[in-house]
Image (cartoon, rainbow, N blue to C red; front, side, top):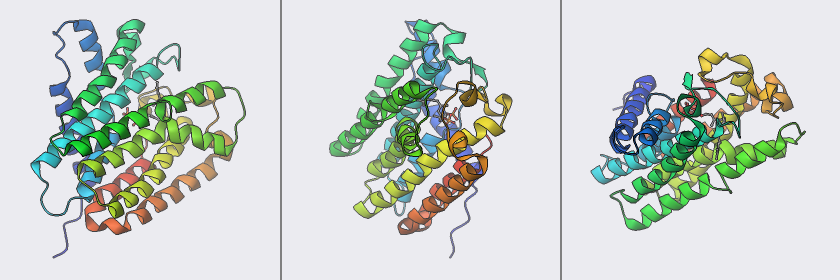
Length: 303
Ligand code: GRG
């Protein structure tokens, strides 16, 4: 019998609500001292976001498990999905600070430093980061896999990953950079966490080397596609649609795929990366349906 076709919007919504509930439960309550810090951490993390990274963790895990999902793997995927969303939330809070992008709108609401204050926002980001690793340490899977997962996330968030990409981004404002340099910057700044999300799902599910290599190829294509589309949306969508300030890259004189390739070629690149992502999934079979649908979602999204 043919498996039922995936209802992707319903799947994504269910996964987003599920990780939101996990985050709500694990974040310190807003009345626990220091209350203002805890309130800021919850503000930065809860009630918004597409939860693409969490969805990638779940979809990659599902692609590598045949038959029913063991409870330990399911709990481990919850921890990994929440951990990556905590790191992502911290990065957005710090990115919006006056010393970085100096932005006032995020997820359709005032940024954390505007809603609270700069020092509290900085501390909220600082505190979200270790909380992610505390969570990974609690995964009820083989200790060797916990170590692998921690290493993947640490590497992706650090100076050889997201923080390094952010540094290159800051130093490249107003300079002309080549397509290769742009790609390096984005593969670190945005791609590293997306790639780590897919890798974490595979590690937690105990993926084989064939499965891991398929996931790696898929993640490389999707990680880059995400940024190309982000650059396109920055010029084609408005702030209301995006929930953040549109047109900011051009206003800040930042090099982007659109400024480098033009809109049509940037769109063609995103489409070709979507094709690469689909091809990479061939060895994973039917269970990779959510990963395939996520590649479509990332490329065809309008926010
Ligand atoms: C401060 C160390 C440090 C890093 C910041 C992530 C980042 C690096 C900067 C964010 C700037 C930015 C808008 C990058 C473009 C790609 C991106 C990460 C967009 C936001 O991710 P979404 O669209 O956000 O998944 P939601 O709100 O849906 O979670």
